Length: 177
Image (tube, rainbow, N blue to C red; front, side, top):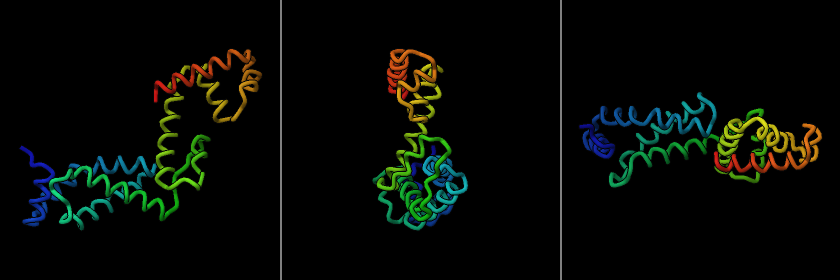
């Protein structure tokens, strides 16, 4: 039977058993890396932040309360480390996609911008799942910032048809999100 995270922490802190901490790293390294990569959008930066996360965990392991959840603790360290690194570099990655340009609003905190960026990605993925007739109307309205009348003219469709596709497309997006 595999020892719990908390048992491994106790084993490491009481007897400096390096293999106990190595086991924690093996368990959480891939998860922490993937989690951090969602924040940064960059493999190299995610790799550096993940390494820094485990160094911080190693330095502060004696402060860990074993009555708490280790996974939550390590992910909190990862999140704070990612946010601090992004603040230092002042680099929230933006793609060429117009949705993500809306995130450049500097009045938002770094955390809010990161959350907004993830929401933008989720929205883009959801739009791609829409049927083409809805997707084109939504994209023209949101990405190209066209009015519904302009979209109708561009598609050579009636205004009511475009309005209907837009409303139905938004309803499908709500369901997908």
